[in-house]
Image (cartoon, rainbow, N blue to C red; front, top):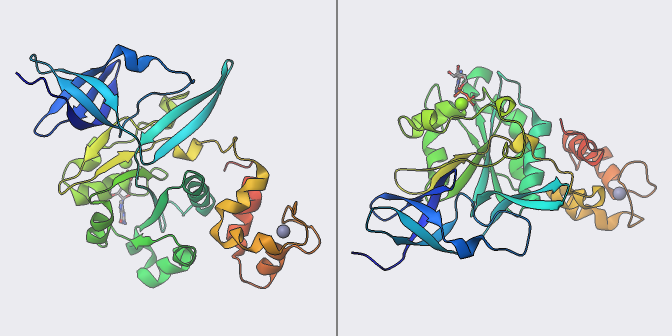
Length: 305
Ligand SMILES: Nc1nc2c(ncn2[C@@H]2O[C@H](COP(=O)(O)OP(=O)(O)O)[C@@H](O)[C@H]2O)c(=O)[nH]1
Ligand SMILES: [Mg+2]
Ligand SMILES: [Zn+2]
């Protein structure tokens, strides 16, 4: 009989039970009672957490300890009793934002929103531009997404239909915990199926409209990749409110604005029609993309679309 605790990752949570990925099999665990005590309002454990668990003779287990997270994707939820700190995903390494070059038309304002969320949460972001076959190839696709690498966000061009870019996508997913985001219809499932047969079907998004409320944004399950790493679908990232973001902090989440704002004449500059604004000047002189500036203004105004 094993009495030693072991380390594993939380893959799934369902009504009080956690599925932990053990060394050679998955173990269904409950949380040790004393871990449930807390001094704050919020989740104690989330999918993606690394835990120490005690295997029991009947094959189940008890989670004894939650190991320190190296990163988190969280959301502060307003409740009548105060803010609740919800863990959307524990220990993510990156957000992978998937968009199509066409069908549907890439919603770059939404992409910029994802990137702001990643910046705010100190997470790396990678962009996947799928369906390059529909715009006639790489050159055309780069007209749509070419700005992003200059801002520090890698773009992987793919066609799930033609199997293009799939190995490059695999190489950034292997060995990492990735939260997939993107509107429906862009080809997330198709790309996952190209990576690993059946994966697209497993990681199916639960329609946000069917699942309103507090848990819309939470990752439900983490899927191990052959060769290492995990992917999760973050169904509600597009709805992840930036309501706890102050308008003044937003320029810090745009890499091309971050340093510029030091040069604005006034330090409470709103970068709109303020005199001596370095951002407005940079847009006029073509050093900042008008589209990105537009995203900044919209997010600043609280526009969530
Ligand atoms: N032309 C083209 N169609 C694609 C590509 N990837 C996916 N599709 C199609 O786009 C539609 C939506 O794909 P799906 O994988 O379900 O998207 P999801 O909603 O993001 O999971 C399906 O009809 C796919 O066959 C691609 O690279 N090129
Ligand atoms: Mg899908
Ligand atoms: Zn300014």
